Structures are given as C-alpha cells and as structure tokens.
Image (tube, rainbow, N blue to C red; front, side):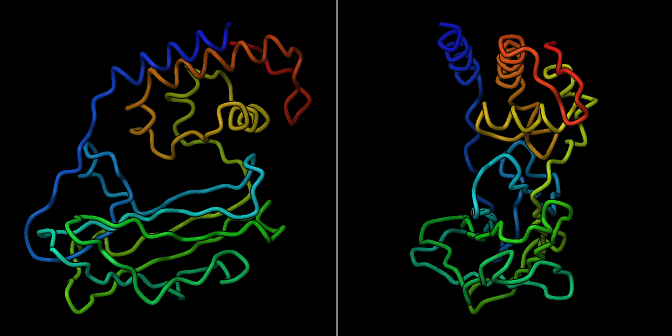
Length: 236
C-alpha cells in the first residue's frame, strides 16, 4: 500500500509539470551540441555529460549526445559529422567506447538528432579514475558549424559514485547527509541517478521530494543499514 501511495504522489507531481516543446531555431543551416535538453535552460552552456557505471549493474551503455540545427528543417536527411578529438581524449576506443560512425544523419523535417555513443565498463581502473571522450563537430557538405561555444563537448565516464556538487545546497533537504552507500541504494531502488545539473533537479523538485520520502521510509523499514564507513544511515 505504501508503494501505491508514492506512485500516486508521483502521478500528481508529473501532472503538475509543464511540457516543454522543442522550439525550432532559425538562421543559417548549421549544427551545434545541445547537452541541456530542457528548453527552459537552452541558454545555459553545458559542455560535459558525466556518467558512472556504479550501481547500474551493466557492462555497457549508450550516451545520447544531442546535436541541434540552427536553421530550418529540410525535406531530406542531411549528414552530421561528429569526431573524437584525440588530443583531449583519455579514453581508449574498444576498451572504454565504441568507435564512432563516419557520419550520422539529421532526419528529414527535424531540427535535432541524438548521436549514440556506446561506452563500456571493461576497465577495472574505472573504479578509481574517470576517462574523457572529447567530441567535436565538423562541417558537412550541407551543414555548417553553429554556435562557437557549443562545437565540442566531453563525456566523462567512470565506475565511481561521485557526490553531486549541489548536494549540500539542494539534495540534502530531500535525502539527508551524503554517503556513497546511500547514493548507491537510491540508484538501485529508484532506478535512476541524481541529475548532473542543479537546474534539472529543481525543475523536477516535487518528484525528487517524493523519492526522498520513499527512501527515508526504506532506510527505516530496513534499519539498520550501514554506509561505507560502518556508520548507520539514519532515516531523515
């Protein structure tokens, strides 16, 4: 019954959220990376995607890197070229990620395309370090380069759990004090990680408050659960 109660609260939370429709850009036919996909925050420049395999129990995953069109949608598909910047990349192809295609396609009548980057959890060293896959856009025959600040981006991949940088300012009020063990159990129970950006968390604050209440009950019902330092994780 308690789980049904939380599901009911989540439905209310989702119902109260406004739909953010994609707004087509106009201008020259050019492309640029758009890592922040919430339209309200499109003016914010985000240059990295942070991903950890920790707590997910998978050997590989796919990161979707969005490329936007600055211009008008066309009735035919057009090539988009994304390459790995070897000088800024510390990840190894085949070990940490799958080689990229020579080109991708911006679908007809579309103003964006999601580029799939397959990443691997084969390297045990990822438990203690983070590797970088640096991506860059190149012009194609039909698409120029767009916003200068958004022509490159980084994918930061590891198998470590990292404390979100905004935990103390925001998440703490919904989930209490941080510990890696708490973080891991939240990911397992909620089947999702905390957003990288504080703006994303705030945009779904009602949902995360419900999740926080659910997890507090989880630690109370399974008391005591100890963290990585053998301290009891207290419900909040």
